[in-house]
Image (cartoon, rainbow over all chains, first blue to last red):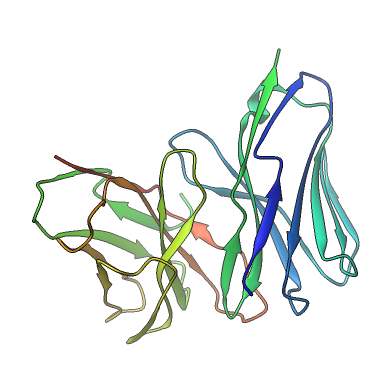
Length: 110
Length: 114
C-alpha cells in the first residue's frame, strides 16, 4: 500500500548535538526521497533530496542516507542550531504524487 | 517566492457557505496539488492534477471540489458538505514525473469556520 512511516514524532536535542530522523516506505519502485522543513506557520521547503542511484547525499550540516534493500532513509543534521527547530517531513513517490510521513517536530535547545 | 501563490492568506467562513481558495503558479509545472494540514498533523492530499482538464481525488476529497481549466491555476472549493473545514490549506506544484520530483509549495491559506 501507500505508506511512509516517520520516526520519531518529536525530537529534542541540545544545540551542537546531532539529530537523526528515520522513514520507511513500502513501495519498492520508489526512487526519489525528499525531505522538507516547515517552520511554524510557513510553507514546507525542500532541504535535501536523494535518488535511488546513490546511497548518501550531503549538503553542509545536512545529509540523507538511503537503504533500498531495507526500504528506509534517514535525515542527519549535525551541529544543530536553534534555527533548525521546525517540523521535518519525509516523502516518497507513488503514481506521480508524493506520500508524506507524519512529520517530526525537532526542538533544538540553546 | 518560488513562483506559486495562494490567496487569501486568511479566510473566514460561516457554516453552510462554500468558499474558493486560489492557487496560481508561473513555474510552467504540469502537476498541481492541494493538501490539508491540521495542527500538529502531516500533509493530507485532497486533490491533484497532472495535466490541464484532468484531476484525481486524493485521500480526503469528500466535501471538496477542484477545477483545472488552465495550466497555471488550480482553485479549490470547500463546500458546505465538508463538516470540519477549519485547517491550513497548502497548494503545491511540480514537473510531472511518475518517479517523483520536488514539489514547490505556496504560502498557504488558513481557513476558519465561524
